[in-house]
Amino acid sequence: GAGVSQSPSNKVTEKGKDVELRCDPISGHTALYWYRQSLGQGLEFLIYFQGNSAPDKSGLPSDRFSAERTGGSVSTLTIQRTQQEDSAVYLCASSPHSTANYGYTFGSGTRLTVV
Amino acid sequence: DQQVKQNSPSLSVQEGRISILNCDYTNSMFDYFLWYKKYPAEGPTFLISISSIKDKNEDGRFTVFLNKSAKHLSLHIVPSQPGDSAVYFCAAPGAGGTSYGKLTFGQGTILTVHP
Image 1: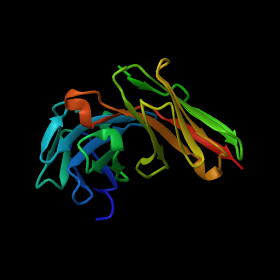
Image 2 (image 1 turned 120 degrees about the vertical axis):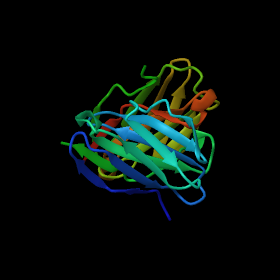
Image 3 (image 1 turned 120 degrees about the horizontal axis):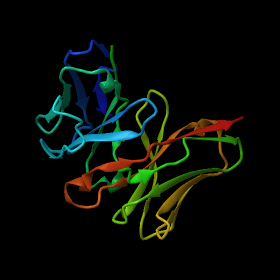
Image 4 (image 1 turned 90 degrees about the vertical axis):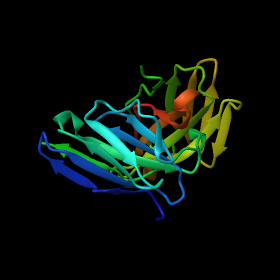
């Protein structure tokens, strides 16, 4: 596709439920990133993929968070047993480069609200 | 540990005047810096970057200045336009190891340009 596509755009879930957030990167982009932005906060790094492997998953807040990428393309971020503090906008980005010097292209995000 | 800091949460400027957005960093290993702009309900978009071998980079109305000795960079927008109203983030790629591919973002500054 022309850009990074994320789905759903909005998700409201009850505390304790599991959610899956999907990211379709730009075709051919080998690097894929997940960030989140909580209310009034900056962009918090979660995990990044180079191909299907994740060289850096240091930003995942707890073991309730996991992510995978298959076929070097689509990625899914899963949050188990959601908590209210998980409410945030989850942003996915992709890049054709292995270095971040050239920046990357972001999707519009998934707004997650845990009630 | 906030390695990239934007200490001004907001800035208000009159149309036609100069907007100056500031960013400080603590990691002397950073050698590249980027600015992103974010409108509500959209993902951040790349604006301009600068390598540490330069002290200035200009692109149209946007100029980024880098002062390595002070570990400080700034984004100047001249003249400011109402359409520039957005959140501005500075970011730096990780310095080595598995952090090489990821961007560390500041907290963002909300710029409002009044007509």
